Image 1 (cartoon, rainbow, N blue to C red):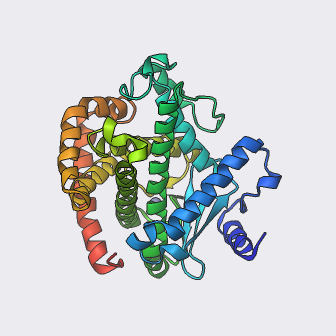
Image 2 (tube, rainbow, N blue to C red):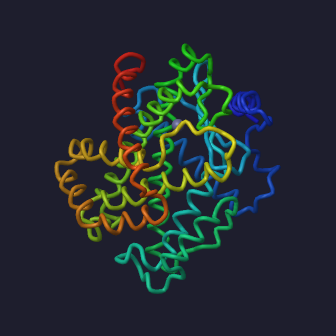
Length: 352
Ligand SMILES: [Zn+2]
């Protein structure tokens, strides 16, 4: 291990109860195809952070080190202070790419891409497959046409940008607040119920939304970049980036909620429920997108009007609990969190 890898390994071992260190490919049981894939993705993520536009959007991001943690679980952590780094479980990256491949194997979604009629799953079957996707990483669900494989890869990359934007925000903006108020140098996504009191969760949830803000922004900007690159031919197939962004991010948030329930039934999630995160990200991008391109505001509004049924089908059938009491509770919580986030941003967080 080089010195940075050593330092990362130390941090990783120190902060996990079960002493999980840095992922070492040579010691892993994964086959060479998956190892090569993971290596390419890590190189890509590092390049994205160090050379891409992320460093311009989030000051300080270029100096943040990122590496894999030796865990299959779909999780990540952010470490601030003396060594700014992000630990992302190798299994998280694999499951993100696996997920969008599976999604594109459904003949009922993205009807305009490739030959959906050749795909194997109906919508109902997709739902069942996704429920059981955790822990597999077989990469056995490959879409039938090149266009659909490319689309799966593109949506997975958009999702990875979301995760990077989210974790970088924890490192760069929340680290100091955590150290001062909670004497914690690491921000996890899930906690042992003993660590925080229920009163603290309003802070934690507001910070999660703050992190989602940058996740949304970076993932949308990536799509903007792809759209303006003629070789992707996206402009010929879609009116704008909104439809792809919504499908990628809204379903990612559903997937994460599902994975949390599966992997961490005894931990407390610091995140608001997926529906609140989804609504928050959509509302935020509706405001932010037109600043990137005036046309994008219209594109987002039209996408929401024209594809709402389809999107709701994709999310609602899988994730929204539609009983009235929960919805009104959710509306109340959403409003409360927005207010608290504004308060936190004004009083405790860096203004980036
Ligand atoms: Zn988070």
